[in-house]
View 1: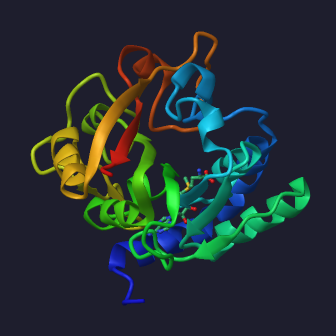
View 2 (view 1 turned 45 degrees about the vertical axis):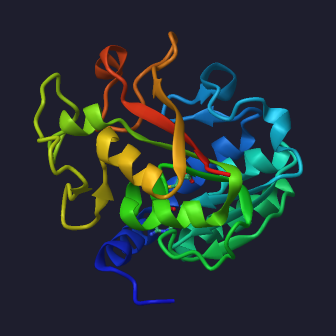
Length: 255
Ligand SMILES: C[S@@+](CC[C@H](N)C(=O)[O-])C[C@H]1O[C@@H](n2cnc3c(N)ncnc32)[C@H](O)[C@@H]1O
């Protein structure tokens, strides 16, 4: 494995510091009887990002930036063979203890999603929910996801919407105003402790296509009618009622 880039080290340090805060949310997500998406936990039955769920039974998935592992746990319950990949040992320790608590086991690999120690064409689904999708350099992790996928396989990832990033200041919540430039947007450092990546849709589509990934869907997530504000300060329900705060990308690897 090559030396880790500075953004990966910073993000790993940040996730090591904050991992205790994610144990309880992780446990609640593991408890969920259905797959949900994003901070308002919109059910997959409403979102439809994964299509007909029966198609995944017996198939292989790799979750890039799996954190506490609940997305992989949900896929496991569909009958998939998931593998979780995460750079932060403390996050994987939580995932392991939740595996023990819920009596479910699947492989967890400590590695950067920008350089995954798994063979080419090892999965049918590469997935990320606020994992590699925002914490990794897209010019590194998207080619990795494409390499891991079998022809015809699917890449599904959830991230903050580009619009929300454009409206969010370095400190504080999303505003009803454009604050950042879209041109040149990619690496975003809200503070000196971590690095996020938010490549806009145009360059993202070009990047995906250059890796043999054809976009099938881009789903704007709206909070459910009965939603309330979440513990996340950067986005308020009132904003998200007007504009999509989160989006899910679905792309297929060319046969
Ligand atoms: C919001 S959490 C994961 C989301 C997951 N669905 C959850 O909540 O448990 C983000 C995860 O990305 C991981 N991460 C950050 N940079 C990474 C990298 N370069 N490679 C793999 N994982 C990374 C962090 O360690 C953290 O566990």
